[in-house]
Amino acid sequence: MRRRDFITLVGGAAAAWPLTARAQPGLPRRVGALLGYGENDPEARIYLAAFMQGLAELGWTDGRNVHLEVRWAAANPERISMLAKEIVALQPEVILTSGTAVTSGLRRETQAIPIVFTVVGDPVGDGFVAGLRRPEGNITGFISQEASMGGKWLELLVEIVPDVKQVAILFNPDTAPDGGSYYWPSFAAAAGSLKVEPISMPVRSDAEVETALSTLAREPSRGLVVMPENFTVVHRPAIVSTAARSKLPTIFAVSAFARDGGLLSYGPDYKDNFRRAAGYVDRILRGAKPAELPVQVPVKFELVVNLKTAKALGLSVPPALLARADEVIE
Image (cartoon, rainbow, N blue to C red; front, side, top):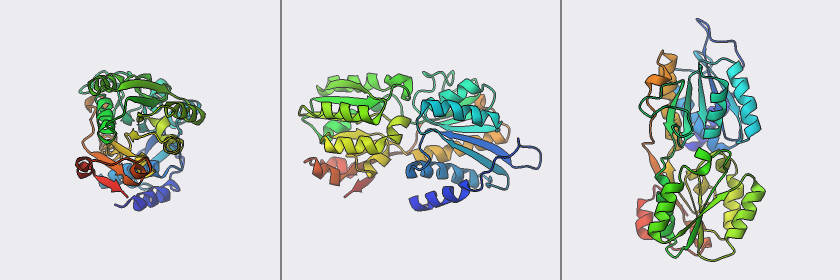
């Protein structure tokens, strides 16, 4: 299915998602979804459409035997808290979430309603599950990025910018896994091996992004890694444009950044994670308990290189890196 078709699918379905009573025999089953993205983000709509397509493939048709109640939190802590209460009050049979902060907000509101998360980095460290094989509670789901990815992003950035001396990793401590510390050990270890100075860069607003990146770019031979979490995805226009203006070579974990003008990205295919999450929602609707469903790791990854941005930065992308790329933007 093409990206435009995904957007059309979810846009058309949204109009048919009314508020309904708690599922009763003969009535459609109610599924909640609290997503950390902005409602008008085309990429987020694609993720939701992938989830709905996965449900359809398993026999769940919106408006016939399932109703999906969707709320969009836009990485706003106050909105997350409000919408978590709202979703729980609807008493759905299972709730889909995206992001650490969103999953945490729902966990505070219910320990009974099953929750299936996507785009969560460290569900054990954040207390969502007791272990990956045995979640033991009402929560399970699909990890977005493993901790070792911090080092991988730095290795790829150094491959395309071999003379880089200092690299910052940008995140919002209010929404990032473990407050931003989840990826730091592998990032710092790789920095030591590559003779690069690692810098921690917490931000909480577009204004702080502007200040932090402008300051970082004042000295030559500096680069940037953008941590994958709801804040950075929601604020990607500001992050991508500021990195471009500052002439900062930057690697991202989510392909949408590279397609929107970022230099390169490497990470799991989020559409695939959302599609796979439909399988767990299906199993829960058919009687399975989250405690019986082990947390899953990503299985599909994608490397995207933006040659147009590389040219603007005066960088020559190594042929070996281009050969490994799943998508090259020219």
